[in-house]
Image (cartoon, rainbow, N blue to C red):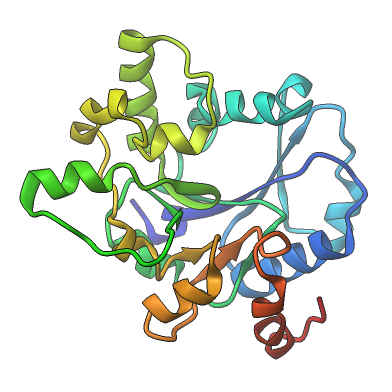
Length: 247
C-alpha cells in the first residue's frame, strides 16, 4: 500500500456549533495532522459548511442520522462493518473525537508498530504487570483501550467484526470494550486482533489519571490525550499553554 494511503484521520462531528474546547481540539488536529487526509464523519442532515471554512481540504463522509442521535447510536456505527468498509482504501484510521488533543505527529511511527487497535489505556495506579507468557497476555486483555483517540487497522477491524457477528451476533456495549477484548467472553478474539499491553499503549495516549500516567511514561508526553476536560485539566493546562492554548 502506498504511503499516501497509510492512514487517515477520522473526526466524528454531531452538530455545526463547536464549543471553545472542541474548536481547540479541531484546530490542533489540523495544525499537527493536517498533512494526512482529514475526514469528517457526520450525520446526513448536518451541513458541513462551518468545518470546511476552517479547513477547506476536509473530506466529508455522511452516515445515517440515527448513528448520531445518542451514544448508543455512535457505538453501533463504530462496530458496523459498513463503517470500516468506507475507509478500505486506507490501512489505518485514527479516530479523533473532539474531546481529544494531539501534541505531536508520531502517527506514522505508531502505524509501523503493527497493532490492530490502540487507544489510551485505563490504568489505576499503582499498576504492576504480573505473570508471564500466555497467562500475562490474558490478564492484560482486561485493560480497556479508549476509543476516543484510537488508531485502528481497517482490514483487521473488518475481519474481527465479521467473525464476531457470525458467532456472537450484535455487540450492544461500548465499542472500545469490544475492540479492547475487555471482557472474558471476548478472549477468543486474541487470535484476531494484535493489541498492545497497557505499557506499550501509554506513550500513545493518556486519559484517566494523567499525572500518574506521565510518571509511568518517564515524564514524556504521549502522542495525544482524550477527555482532558474531564480528567485533571489542571495537569494539562501548562502543556496546552505551551501549544498556544488557554483552557
